[in-house]
Every structure is written in C-alpha cells, then in structure tokens.
Image 1 (tube, rainbow, N blue to C red):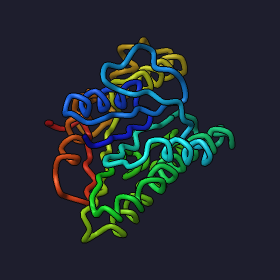
Image 2 (image 1 turned 60 degrees about the vertical axis):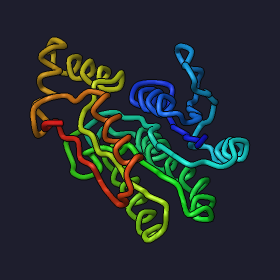
Image 3 (image 1 turned 90 degrees about the horizontal axis):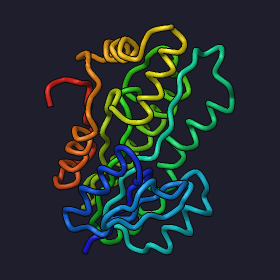
Image 4 (image 1 turned 180 degrees about the horizontal axis):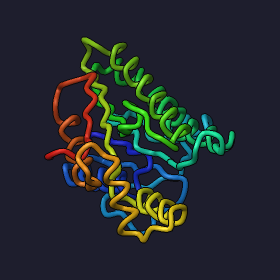
Length: 236
C-alpha cells in the first residue's frame, strides 16, 4: 500500500483530496495544525505545523517512505498594499511557500532514490497573475510556483513527477470568509459580494472543490511532470 501525505488535509480541499486518495486504496496521512472537525474515515490525522522545520522533520521521519505528497496547506487574506502588515506578509509566505518547501524537501531525496514518487502542489491562479488587494497572498503563491518549477526541473528524466494545480476562487471556508470580508467593506449583501468575487474570475464563477480534486487526481495517476493546471472557472 502506497503512503500519501496531504498537508492541510483535514478540511476543505485537503479533506476532499485525502478522502479520494483513501478511496483509491492509499494509506493517507492528513497533516494539520489542529484536530479535524470530525472523524476522518480511513485517514490518519496528525498535528504538524508545516512552517516549523523541527515538526516537519519529526513527522516525516515517523511516517517513513512517502509515495505521494500533496502540498495543500494554505492561508489567504486581502488588504491593499499600504495596509498589508508585515505579520500578514510573513504568515502567507510561511504557510504557502515555506511549508511546501519543507515538506517537499523532506520527501524528495527518498523519492529520487526509489526513482518513484508524485508531488502535487495546490497553488493558485494568484501564482500566475496578479490582482488587487492580495499582495502577500500572490507573492507567496508566486514563490511556491517558482519552487515547484525548480523541483520539476531537478527531477526531469526520473520516475518522480512534480506538478501544480492553480485554481481561482474555490467554494471553501476560506472563500466564504473572503466574501464576508467584501460584504463588510463594501456594504453589499453576501449574494452580491459573491457575485462581485466571481466577476473577478475569467469565467465569472467560483469553482467547486470537486474540480480541484479531479485535477489533482489526474496528475497523481498520470506520468506528466512540470504541469501547471490552471482552473479559472472555465468548463471542467
């Protein structure tokens, strides 16, 4: 049985990816900074702050050989540049970029030694292009995209595949909070705030978690490497 690790794997997109991997027969270990909100069927939940090098090292040492790594842990926020605090900046960089760096570093050598392994990072369309009010978030996603491009180049020609998925706004708790933030700042009701957010996407809609899961699973079951799958709200 292959072992799959999903960071941020107990909620939202991560929980859905964990469930799909478990259904496919993997031993799934879901990492998070807190206990899951509900029991996860067939999934091992472990506490691990992916921004903490010592916790990451200890956790992956306990897990042992990893066949699949999904870097999904992430945070977001919105503020115009002039109001973006250093704390916001550092938090986004730590979780969205450094966390993926530490976890990828923890598994890459063993994967290369076996000449087998799959890594998928859930990035963001913000890592491909910019948008107003997301300086810290977009910078962190550009950083992790740069990391993944380098890792993909380093493993080229081996049995290890490294890819990323770049969704626009996904219907998760994080996006619901963003919609509430828009409503509070603009005086719009929640429906109008969601419509305004959807309008900012290329195809005018917020995508569903299942679409991200499908894209991740397609990369994990295929042999392509160095792919950046953009999920921008267009036809799935």
